Length: 282
Ligand SMILES: [Fe+2]
Ligand SMILES: [Fe+2]
Image 1 (cartoon, rainbow, N blue to C red):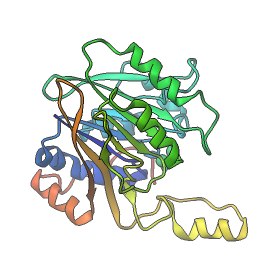
Image 2 (spheres, rainbow, N blue to C red):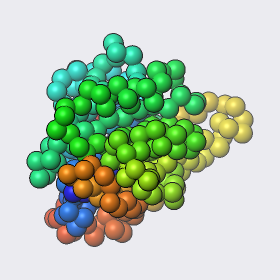
Image 3 (cartoon, protein in one colour):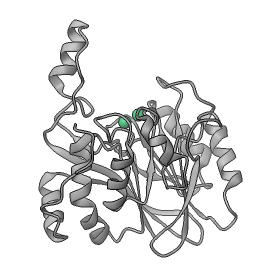
């Protein structure tokens, strides 16, 4: 079976490329389950109920989040229900939202998904390594396939998580830095690993925000509005092939869809006119 994790969806440009390209990607790559980190989907920070529904309608089966999980309070009611949207599993127990989901893949195979937050340059949270152990102990006995989104800054932390969970989950894939790393591999125990799958949003930017604004603030100290950028929109993600009987990964590869490729996929599935219609403007 084949899983895709889409990296941090940033603002309207990021949502737009998902809405246009994902149906074609599902078809051409024969995807069984699609997970996306959408912590930056609403104007660059957080997610709203309308955006959540739009991403689900576009073909995303499970939504993970990160350090911007609670930026838009209106998502709390959705997160407190049974929807496949997750807070990082190492937030306090009292935090709104679910720590893991078990979602059926296209074939019916149950797939567990959870996210964890790193602790370098991040809000203080519980130990992600022990939190991962706790989630794994709680998973139903019939679950063999497990995808972990480790939302963290430091590549060393991500490698530690890969080794900590090697042989116990199908994939440990990173998000948060918005820059894809070229280190995808299958670890000795059969876990697919990559430090960061990259960003889904405007590449002509500083990790998704307008270059001029970020430069001005950095060089002068003057606060500016870090508006979401607009040009050279790309979708980044990583595809993992998994043996459903053992849960072990058999292949891992990076995915990059630029605007030309997104246009081709939109034509393929009749989505040329599809637009991101949800409420957040940027
Ligand atoms: Fe992000
Ligand atoms: Fe983040």
